[in-house]
Structure formats: structure tokens, C-alpha cells
Image (tube, rainbow over all chains, first blue to last red):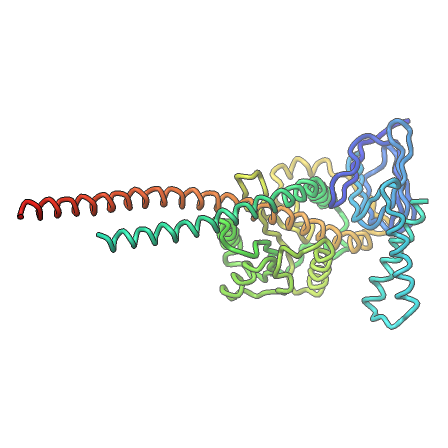
Length: 133
Length: 288
């Protein structure tokens, strides 16, 4: 199958720079896949599981949160706020974060802004847990 | 003569204690620098790719529904100036201010300072200051960058200013740091600085935005701003420490040289005192 150059970067460094066959990410409008020969394209990333199939046909899963994906003249760039490969996810920490966030929400008594923050934390933890499994 | 010797001795001691301080500062800066440099280097590819992506998008964009893309008629510029918290870093802060001064002269501006020295500078100059809550660059984290970006976006949309530009210090190497600046918002500004713009315009490809250009820009612009600011903060911190290390290294060397010279002077004065004493004794014994 055809491959295309793919770059995945986060503020903590470039995590992937090479040829890939396919990448699937969750955007703000739902899951989407990019294959070779995609038209110029740009959208923002939501929170969810992502996976890519590299040039050797191997699939790697990751938790991907926030950022943008763009395809420009055949080069695909995924610039995420957080991108954690499945094997690097700290399940224990995610489980703790989930429990903490759930407790805070159950207690109620949060300002709108705090609620948004806790909610986002919970979502991140859930994404990590579902990918890490 | 004896009082002169005492004065020189005191001077030597004072230079020695200054040297100890500069030496300590150099050591602290170089140990912090290692971490800051690693952070700047890991962040750099992201920073560059992010900027490149947005330049490409700005280049090929034909959709002007989002306010982030349009170059409006509001000429006011918001400068995000990223500097240091402390002095004694050679020309680090003053270089930044000099460039900033040259670039922003005569323009209608508002400044968003990051770093204590920048806050002080803005107050001294009497520039309009957007917020000084990020006065300490040492404590700026990724989430702070997101709050800065959100704040900027909100004010931008409210029409408080029409452009955003970024000033920071690029970490080129341990020995050299240069001031960098580029326009950030609106995206239309990004293409103005391209030399081969004409050439690139010919091969303009349409870009597909999903679900819509406006929604995409509303979602990615804060991310993009935060990413750029974070990258610039990393670069600036590393630059500051490198500048401080170099400055303190030079100061330590100078202090060493000064001590050598003072020692020479001290010995000469001591020798002169001894000679004089001998002469006096000899003259005295001759007299007997």
C-alpha cells in the first residue's frame, strides 16, 4: 500500500517522523483516517484513541488529546497537546486521576470554571484508560 | 606606604568575594542550563512544525470567515515580549529591548510581558500593559501558556488589538543567542514576510476544513498560540541561562585578572616599604 510522510509532534518532542500507511485520529468532528494522496486538509483534534499503521504494516495505538492535524501537499502533520503511545501510558496514574475527578464531581460544589477543568481531567483519564487496556 | 598596603589588601579581598559570587552564579546557571537546553531542544521541532503548518495554511487559505484570518482595520499590535526575571545576564535583556524598541517604534501598541524584567521595563516606559500576572518566567508552565493564549484570543476577538507579534530570544548555541520576532495573528500576517510569495501564490492549493473553517480556526488558534508561546518560553529560558553563564564566566575571569594585578601592586608596595625601612636604618647607623 502507498505510504505518506507523517510527523507527530508534541511540546515534549517529535514522536514520529517517517512514512506511514494510515493514521486514524479523533477530530472535533469525529474519527477520521488519513491515507496517502489525501487532499490539503486541516482540522482540530478532539480527545480519543488514535492509531497509525506504519510502513511495515505494524499498528501502534496511542491516546491523543487536543491539537491539530493538517495535510499539506502530501505531508501529514499531527501536532497534539498530548500524544502517548499505548505502552507509555501510566495506567495507575490515570486510574487515580479518574477517581479523584469523579470524587470532585460527585461532591459538587464547583465553580463553572473548576467544573470544566475537572471534567477535562476526567475525560483525559478515561481516554488513557481505554487506550491503555 | 603601610596604609596603601592595607587599602590594596582590602580591595583584593573585596574582589575575591565578588569572584566567589560570580563563580557560584556561573555554576548555578550552567547546571540549570543543561535542563533548559534539553527542554528547548525537545520542544523545537514541535515549535517549528507548528509555525510551518500555520504558514502553509495561511499561504493556501482562501476562506476568510474566521476573524483569526482576516487582516482587519485595527492597527493596534499586541506584542508578547518574553524576557528574563533577573539581570546579570550580559546583554540578554537589553538586546531584547533594543530590538523591540526598533521594531515597535511609532506603532500603536500594547505589551504582554512575560518575565519580571520585561514587566519593569514596560512600567518604566509607560507602555500599555495587558496583564502582568505572568511576571515570573521561571514558573511558566504549559498550562500557563494555554491561559495566556486564551486571554490573547479573547481580547483579540473583542477587538482590543488587531495583530499579535511575538518577541523572544532564540537559543542558537551555548555561545550565541539572537533576538527573534515574528507576527502570529492574524494568519494573514504570516505570509507577508515570505520572499518568494509570488512564486508560491501560483501553486496555491485549496484546503479542506472540517467541519468548517471557522470552527477549525476557533479550535486550533488557541492551541497554536499556546504552542508557540511555550516554545518561545523554552528558548528564552535557555538563552537567558546561557547568556548568564557566559557573562559570569567573563566576570570571574576579569576578577582573577584584577586580583593578579592587585597582588603585583601589593607586592611592589611591600617591597618599597621594606627598602625604605632599610634605607632609614642604614642612614641612621651612618649617623651614629
